[in-house]
Length: 264
Length: 319
Image (tube, rainbow over all chains, first blue to last red; front, side, top):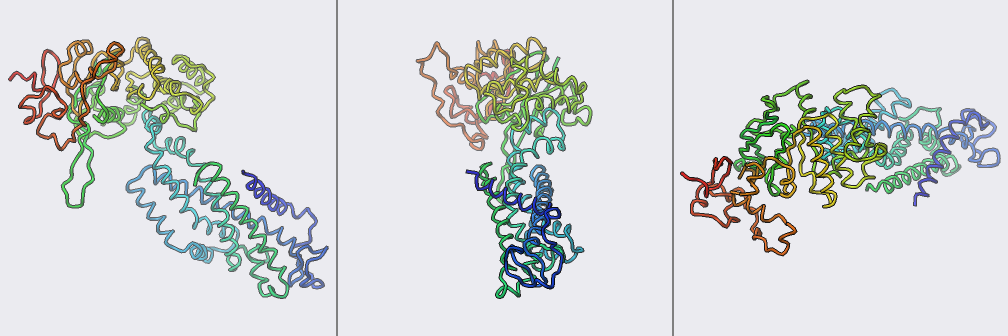
């Protein structure tokens, strides 16, 4: 039943590990401009062809994987941590604290998410961390909402009363009794969010707001070569396919996680 | 010596009404007073929804009171702060009704049981294992339960673990909120014997909340009978069972199933519990009472002393 999830996880791990070890794999240099091999279609030397500056697209796609996948996962983790903290505090204390925090969530949600990510990327100096921050700033809200609801149901359970009766303080109850109950849920939510995150990351680089060139991110490669889509489609197809395949794999992983833990 | 004295305790829950309607309250606990004496078992009896659990939650400071006093050795418990509050938490422990919900499903039994020690900074970490082992042995479990999770146990075993947790801090009073009602009958007897044994060994006091009169008769020294948030009768166990005064107490005792009267026809108690609004000016038991007299529909009875006991019924009002 979870075979598809395992395969997806395998594909993403392969991409990521290949990318990290790309310097020792003797691939062609992803940055090297070769004027004698411009716009070459895929052949035995260049599996995915070359782009308009003669750079090998295969090594650029592999090299770019660590940025796209790494940024996606790190920003998902950051969103989960922020969302978990806000959700737990809001759900446990309720009342005025809940109102304030949930108004903040509503405030963030009232922006179109891509627009907010764009705004943050413009304001902050561009780079890997900015993209992570921008993605996390947009995505923590759904974690907060979900966790809050979950905590509100846990809060009324007898073992929380029991903890209070033996003398646990609020902080201890939050960390030792409530947070562990929310980890699975945020893991599942993370799995669901990853697919969307990698697409947003690609969109940001496509718009020139992500990691800056010459770093070969997938979104940027699609964007830079889109003029050649009719004459030399391989320049766009392969990075585009890389985006689609990872997004698909992330989505399948998310779905498998939610099935496994029976959360819908 | 009195461990806990409850005086005129009230808990009103506000009922949500419309914007311009008058605010109204649900009187869950209305003017309840009793004492829990040292090394004694005080039982609180009544049917579902009469406010028993609300009282236990107030005793543990899990919810606030509306009015009245709960005195622990002469000190109001809602005024306790800091170290005094910690000492109170240590002295009063609770065993909940539902052993399935009252253990954290993600914590191993060892962690659940050592948590009170951690919170109250008792002895050093090296000794925790020994103390916890001793505690589980005392409630009749093997020490290999410690590495397991709550879902691996049956209801009876879980309730034993809950009792062990309550005993960890060697409390002076244990509040047992219907500790048997979600257990099988055979397990009930085990837990009952366990409680009885602990009462004798540990010299602690027990506040037993129950709707099972057989259990109460077996364990308790004094009984308070509650009906719809109010006390209807208060007496020591022997007297109460020998000669129940209040018609409601008679009804409860009569309704308890016994082997000897298995074919007996029970007194009809099918009449539903009246809503509070309907009974402001009359005895709340009126629609269910077979002994009602004229005055019952006009004035609500007050709690009076009769024959050295407390009862709230017009039948015993001499004046």
